[in-house]
Amino acid sequence: METEKVDVLSGIQPTGEAHVGNYLGALKQWVEMQEARRCFYCIVDLHALTTQPDPEALRRASFDLARVFLAIGLDPERSALFLQSEVPGHADLAWVFQCLTPMGELQRMTQFKDKAGAQQGKVNVGLFTYPVLQAADILIYRAREVPVGEDQVQHLELAREIARRFNRVYGKLFPEPRARLSRAARIQGLDGSGKMSKSRNNHIPLLAPPEEIHKRVRKAVTDPQRLRRDDPGRPEVCNVFSLHGHFSPEATVREIEEGCRSAALGCVDCKRMLAENMAAALAPIRERAEALDREPERVREALASGARRARAVAAVTLEGVRDAVGLPV
Image (tube, rainbow, N blue to C red; front, side):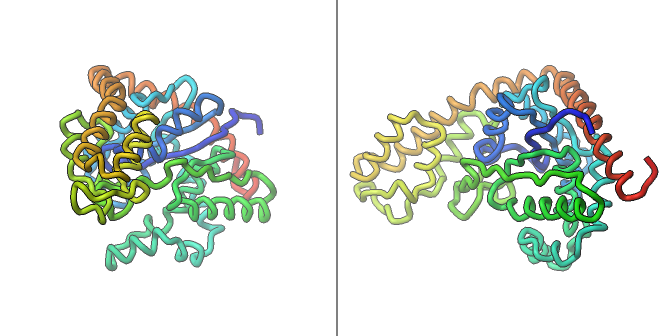
């Protein structure tokens, strides 16, 4: 099958405003990867349906996320940016894969067990089969590499197993995708309770103005053992210090580390410096996003172009799949 080669495939759900955790954990690396690889990046709006979002809210969130894609520097000439739902082949291939996937494998998925426990009997089938659709998202483009956070490694291994099973039953068609763990795979939330998340409200919106960034950073949890200003701190356990590593110059990071350990620098000043440096680093992204708000057609054109490229690649894969399993081609 001759078609466009896809080196990297990744996606993100349109479940609300993009935040600093999304940027450091995934989006920043997406921009870097497009320099040397053929990348397909999708907004996985079909996955978002498992939470039954308000239709208008979903449309707006999808557009806003596409706007963020462009604002951070993704180039639609180099990377295909598209909505998952604009490529029907994702759902078609997911059905074929569901017919190859034992229920026991899905019942072992950690994320399903966590979410099922939280929803107390209100679990829908889509949440259960979510990892199979995710496998279809990846394999329909025969992508070689998938950037993932630690919480998605199990899902990627399922995709690899589904590829092996299909190849064994119907003949070799799919490569086994490799995981590419982010250098910032797990960005802690401001409350220190776990991963930065919109649902926990412990995040910093990526497009927040400086005053909002300062407000949120001021509330961030620091070293729990540093109770007074003159107590020496432990930068290695301080989430504010870890964020400095992403937004502050190296010389500033060293200065903060020394000041924290010697108690020469207090948490208030440390947070102020982080907020200032974060606001400065994110300002160009916010400005580009505001410009795109005034030119929404640029966002729509980028998504339409990306969807055309994605459908062309998906069609070739699906033709091979249909022929392999005995469906009309």
